[in-house]
Structures are given as C-alpha cells and as structure tokens.
Image 1 (spheres, one colour):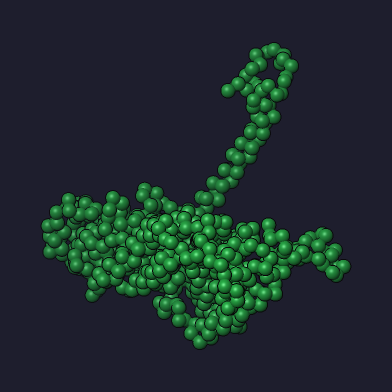
Image 2 (cartoon, each protein chain N blue to C red):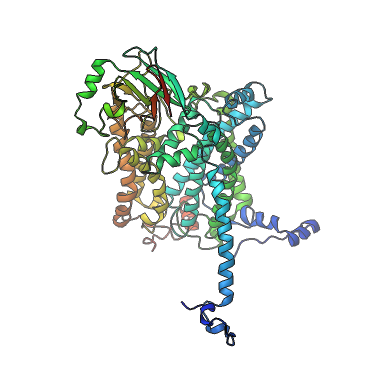
Amino acid sequence: MATAENTIPPGENPAPYHEETHDPRRRDFINIAAVSFAGVGAVAIVLPLINQMNPSADVLALSTTEIDISKIQPGQAIKASFRKQPLFVRNLTPAEIAAADAVDVSSLRDPQTLEERTKAGKKNWLITLGVCTHLGCVPLGAGEGENKGPFGGYFCPCHGSAYDTAARIRQGPAPKNLTVPEYAFNSDTVVTVG
Amino acid sequence: MSFPWAKHYEPKQPLMRWLDEKLPLPRLVYNAIGAGYPVPRNLNYFWNFGVLAGAALVCQIVTGVVLAMHYAANAGVAFGSVEQIMRDVNAGWFLRYAHANGASMFLAVVYIHIGRGLYYGSYKAPREMVWLLGVVIFLLMMATAFMGYVLPWGQMSFWGAQVITGFFSAIPLVGETIRIWLLGGFAPDNAALNRFFSLHYLLPFVIAGVIILHIWALHIPGSNNPTGVDVKGEQDTVPFHPYYTAKDGVGVGVFFLIFAMLIFFSPNLLGHPDNYIEANPLSTPAHIVPEWYFLPFYAILKSFTADFILPAKLWGVLAMFGSILLLFFLPWLDNSPVRSANYRPTYRWFLAVLVVDVLVLGYVGGAEATARNVMLGQIAAAYYFAHFLIILPLVSAAEKPRPLPNSITEAVLAKHGGTSPAQTAMAG
C-alpha cells in the first residue's frame, strides 16, 4: 500500500500535495501513530497491573523447607508444610513397596513407577504434596488411624479420589498422581524440599 | 423510549423547575420508577422480585460498607476480627448476620426473578438484552458471594477458596499458572484474602451499574406481563407510581419479615458450623459443601467421574460454567412466538420438571458422594442440559399453544367475569 512518504523521491521537493488522492492520508498516519503510541504506553502500564497478582517475593522466599525424617518409622507418615501447602513424608513398609511394584504401570491413569517417584536407593521415602490433584483438598491417610482408602495409600474425602501406596491416582475424579515436589537428601535424616 | 401516553414530568415548585433545567435527575427518576413509566395493569406478585433484588443489594452494600470499617483483611487476624465484630462491636452481630443472611435473601429473590423470566418468557424478543444483562448480573453476584464467603477465613472459607480456585487448574497447560496468579501464592493465603476483599468491595458497585443498564434495556420495550401479550394501548397500562410502588411495597414488607426471621431467630440456619473454626491449611473438613445457592452447580461439577477424551475434572468445570453460560443462548434456543407459559401447555410441564430437576441437583450437591447420589446427579445434570439444548427447541417447534387474548385488558376483564374475550389464534 502506497503511503504519502514513499511516493516522494528522496532529496526532491515534494510535488503539490493533493490530500484527497492519497489513502491513507498523512493525517490518518499521524492519527494511527499517535494512537499506537498511546496503546503501547497503555500496555506497558497494564503489565505491572497484571504482574502484581503473581506471588510476591516473601511468598516465594518460603519456597524451601528442611524436614527431619529420622523419627518416622516404617509404615508411618508425617504432615509437614511446604509453600503453605501440606506435604506428606511417608516411610513405606516392604509390603507397601511390593504392592506398589506389583501394579501394571500401563494400566494407570498417570503412569509412573515407584522408582520414578522416589530417589535412587531411598525407595521407602515417598514425599508428595498433600494436595489432591482434583480440587486441592488434603487427602486422608498420613495421620495415625486415618482412612487410607481402597488402595492403602491416601483417600480424599471431598470427592472420593483414592491413591495407592506410591500416591498414584487409582480411582475417583483426580486426573494426576499426588505431586512429587523437587527435593534432595542432605543426609540420611534431613531432606530439603523445594 | 416509552409509550406515547406516558405522563410528562412537570415540576410545579420553582426550585424543582430550576433543578430540572440544570440537572434533570428528578425527571430521570420520574420516568424510570415514577408516574412516567407506564406498566401493564395485570402484573402479579412475581413482578415484585426485581425490586426485591434491588432492595437486597442496597442492604448488602449498607451492611457491607459498615462491616468493612471493623473487618481486617489479613490472614493472621481476619478470623479474629470477625469474632470481634460478633462479640465486641456495638450491634456487630446484627450487621454481620444481616450481611450473611442478606446474601441468601438476595440469591433467593434472584432465583425467583429468573424463574419468573423463564415462566413468562421475559427473555424473548424484544427483551433479549434485558435477559443477557441479567445473566451478567447473576455471574457477578456469584463471584461476589464466593469472595465474600472467603473473608471470615474459617475452614469453609479457606477450603471453598481452595476448591473454587482449583477449577482453574483444570485448564490444560496454563491452568496451574493461572491458579497461582489468581491466588498470589501456591495456596490461599494473605495475598488471596486481600485481593478477594478488594474485589468483594468493588463488585457490588459494578453490579449496581449493570442493574442500571438492565433497567434501561427493560424500559425500551417496557415490562412483560403474565399474558405475554404486547401492550396495545393506554387502557392496558397504569403508571408505575403509585400503582406498582404500592404493590412492590407489600412485597418489600414480606421480604423484610422473612429476612428478620432469619437474622433474629435462626441466623446460622443457612451457614456451616465448620466456618466457626479458623482456617487450617493442613486439615480439610470431612464434608466440604458450598452455600445452598451454589449447590445445583456444585452437583453438576461432581457428576463427571470418568475421563472421556478430556479429563473428568475439566469436563466437570466446563459443564458447571456451561450450565450458566447456556442461559446466554436461551432467547435463541426457544423459538416459540408465545411468551407466557400460561398459553404453552407442553412447555409449562417441562419447565416444572426443570424446577424439580434443579432442586434434585441442589440436594445432590449437598449430599455425600455415594454411588446412588452420583448416579442421581448425573441424570439430573444430563436433564438440565437436555432441557435447554434438546427439549426446548423441539417443544417450541411442535407445541400447539392455547389461544392468546387479544389484549391485556381483555384478559383482565375475562378473569373478572366481564365481557367474554373473542378467542383468537396464536400470535405471530
């Protein structure tokens, strides 16, 4: 599309300008340029207004947690807190490990083996978020005497999702296994999550 | 914009004449809800509910603004500040109970108002825009009610926020990012509570603005009426004031009687005891249910239990939002030219079934997720969508309506044993 500018050869006097014959006119160009400039400015102001909704620095600063796991006996679990969310640390018994390994992985909704969900050589330490992947309730099964559900892992009372001993989703509306956060063993008894 | 026989505003007093020249605000009120707005003469008490919804909004804004003077939107002290309002602030218990039960009253009259629109075909041409704006108001009310329920920071507040913001995590790929952005954290906490308070204060004024548009759009064609027949002449209407200001006054009186019974005799009837336990992110209450006014939608959310192409969770969320968004298409799903269900024998029955269906959904939404209840919820949810998407278009095509009266006046006179109306074929 020809504009007023590129019809004038460089270095020459512009020919008599007939406003009606040019489309868009120079005035249109100035309008578009001015509104575009204001538009870019408006977008630049909207960005911080959107970004202020994201987690603030103090919220992000709480994103690592150290946990002492020395007192958790096989078959026991504790609830800790990570990013203000519950965290389940579970010391699996050999029977529970065997039960998790006996499952045909391809039959699972979110296929993962227990190895993939634990650290090498620490297969008995199952560390997951205690947040049901359906709508975020805290599943039962980490506390003493709580209902572990039909698969011996965790059971969410809100909408009936059942997780197995590797905290994998087996039944109910939840789409995913309980999330395994990033963590590392500092020593045999201390874990840093996050 | 109004009927040609509408009365004209003629201020007598010099002061009012002076004001009318400078700022014709009294003229606007006169034409909107005064003698300058001609209304069909045959409106029944179901036409009270628009004014009642307005009264409820005013109550909510007044009590809410006052409560905000005492409430502290900080996760550390919010629960305590609500208890302080209940125990220490002068008349604080009254204000909070009025606000909490006022939300229930507001939603209750709005549901009847929506039901009135469904029965008498008020969503049909030429009032589609009135209906669309009404659905927008309903969505805004739901958002406002949800965020208000989070503010006391009890167990139900916290877990309600967790579950409802969890809806957004069902969106593929970006869902979790959106959820964290909405909450300003990884779980509901101080950031979420503060922004919910800010929005809970803002949205009622947005609702008030959309209500003005709703009334503006209504006043272009004028009010519908129980026959659904258009106004034909001056004899079909009476001025809004004093006729319907008086009739609405009766309804407002009954409204405040019921409201007062709730506040003074059973203020916690519609609440949940768990919300008097402070929010605990590490312990979910055994049975999470939303407030009664969300139960039918919650039942639709819960009825998707198996993956089918998309994950069950996403289906549930889509269906729940879809059940409301569907209402935006209602004016074009129902093609019958007859508005009032009084003259639509088949539609009338299906509408009654829909009301029962929504009540069943409400029951299922609040009940434990047993196999029987899940099945019941699935059937009821399927029927809800079938009503709007299958039954309504078929009924409006196949139904033979009863003969319509020639005019509103004819229907009124026939009802009171006057001249027998000449029966006519259906309109259009």
